[in-house]
Length: 260
Image 1 (tube, rainbow, N blue to C red):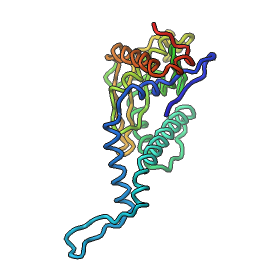
Image 2 (image 1 turned 90 degrees about the horizontal axis):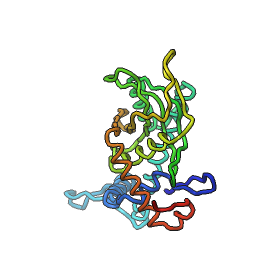
Image 3 (image 1 turned 120 degrees about the vertical axis):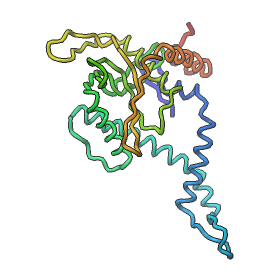
Image 4 (image 1 turned 180 degrees about the vertical axis):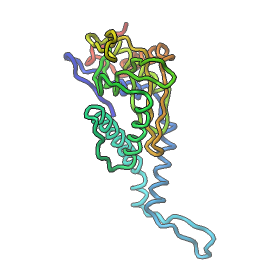
């Protein structure tokens, strides 16, 4: 699903729209779609045996096949809904310090994973769900603030994106978090002091960027630090921006894009 931001008279594509347009997901999606068809049949059709009782098969009608074929759309929307609810629960909790009431087991598992991770890193948010922009694009970063991993001596300023996906996909998530980090470095007027009696540190001195994957099945967190590959991931994203607008000249005009 494409998303755009209207800022200063321009219509800017989102970071995820640009990356999705430039990445070939067809191979993985075809396998996943076929799996969704099989799952629907297993869940909704009767398993029967032949008259000899030595072969079992699913009894499927034409209507069943039509419904099974569409199952990937419903499964995809469900995953998107879970992800949105997880983000909303985290944002609400960090702003109010009150745990939200969660009925969906997948959302609950992901939120529990977040709570486990939060307690390990002394989380201190500055901005949550903050809109940031680059020259021709915009996006919404999940977390900007201070964290302290157990092996660190002091807190560091990080940009972090929450994910409830099956895995961490570095080829897509690396450029995404690099784009957000680059936008934070350019954002002006952000100032914050961590800890009483410490010197103010400007928020554009971003020290790192990472992905936090919250497993909605196991309830376990997975933290992946992308800081060391920031420059290379940002270079990849910038090339994606050029490719995106080369493929979509109308969107390029709406964004005010000019090739450097």
